[in-house]
Figure 1 (cartoon, rainbow, N blue to C red):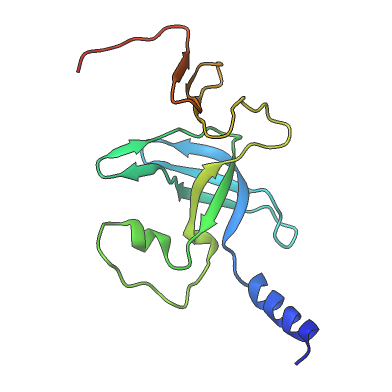
Figure 2 (figure 1 turned 90 degrees about the vertical axis):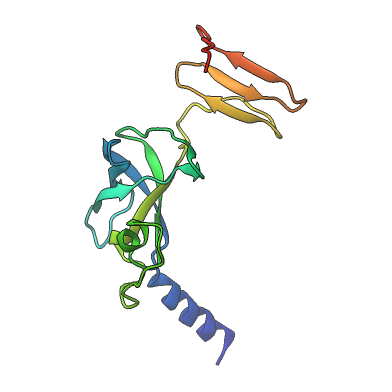
Length: 158
């Protein structure tokens, strides 16, 4: 087999796998941590909208960092190899239908994406930024200092 034939064979197999896409949030349901997403590309000339897609968040133990998406946000959509709903229904190991691989119904929104026309917040290497569209932010700076910009900061006793 020639190298060109091998490359074509690999490319044809990869074309059958759907693992990640970009989408536009069309509706959000924060009570269920889900949203609807229209894919940013057409498939066979058709626009595709995915419904009731779970939102991935930074969640570990009993804590989470949650940023609510809104309609119009551009997001990165991941497709699980196996049945997503079956895997996230509880914390147990589950059986999945091994024939249903990389299906559009196995989608999960994993991140928001800045587009080329979006205003980007200013930050440097080795910094952590929590930024709000109002211009307020919390920045962990390179030297270990903390910078906060806000209209008002309230400190509450726990």
